[in-house]
Length: 128
Image (cartoon, rainbow, N blue to C red; front, side, top):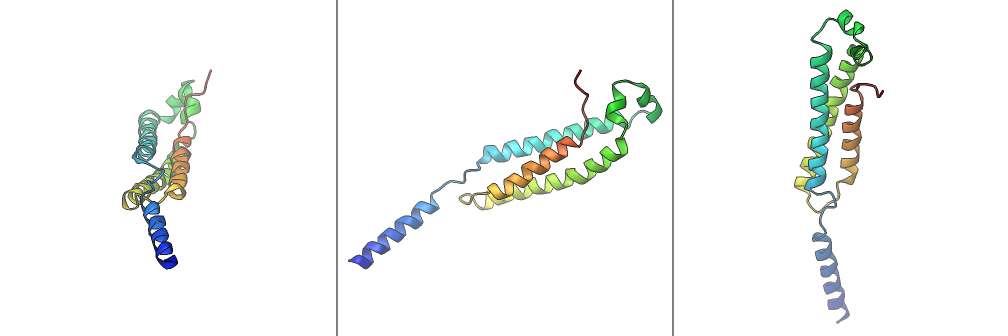
């Protein structure tokens, strides 16, 4: 009797674990992918703005100067952080798709950090 009770208890415990949903839902992955897409659009806009005019002409413009004065360094950072963020976003999405009941928090957090780092390497117009 006791052995049967333990067997039933163990089966209920395993069944309960299997039904726990992943705390990181499709919405979290969607937000992560949107953050990365925003970073890509910022990078594309930066490239279009800072690389279509000659450097001397950009340095005469009071708005363009603080944004484009380090354009080589910024472009290097975009080329470094962009692919890293994209890779982590794809890994996080694949993990959540493959493991819907396992928490992917340890994979989502570095992906968010990479997306934020990617967005932060792109200069913006300073606040007035």
